[in-house]
Image (spheres, rainbow over the protein chains, first blue to last red):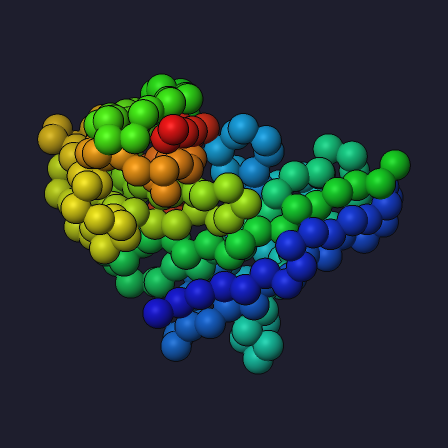
Length: 115
Length: 117
């Protein structure tokens, strides 16, 4: 079974500072990994995904993540935080085999931006 | 085209009532997923369809939960005899398979917030 662990349920950063949201996965084989963002009363929006191509993945809104197999990590970063980045962020994992496409999510990290 | 839509957006049910939640996936998407998101938690998988076939229902928490997608498009999640622990946001997502090329993204709807009183 696959799982993800998000360290830190709440993260606060100052506007303009580096954003780092941590995600570690557990899987017997390298999985596919995703970061989603959720704004209040909205569904989830895909930020970026790792599907066994490049290990450094760039997404929308200036976010990127690096897949590190040796550390079983897929941390999300953004060089300079913006007020509009305040939201809930979820890391998710799924198997790579066809027909087993369900996502397993972490418990989420609420990002607060300090003006 | 339009994104995934869900209705109703909010539903209040008295304990013991039956409810039906609707999901309209993105047109042409063949895969459809239901997730349950409790307050302050990440979404949890409930069930998955490919066209009209329900391929995985391992996440349905009890036999009070039932999902269908009879024509391979719109899906309905039905909860019978609702309990307070069913209170959550129910999210629907769809994904596409285009001529053998797989799409990894799941596109989510806004969810239905169910409150059982």
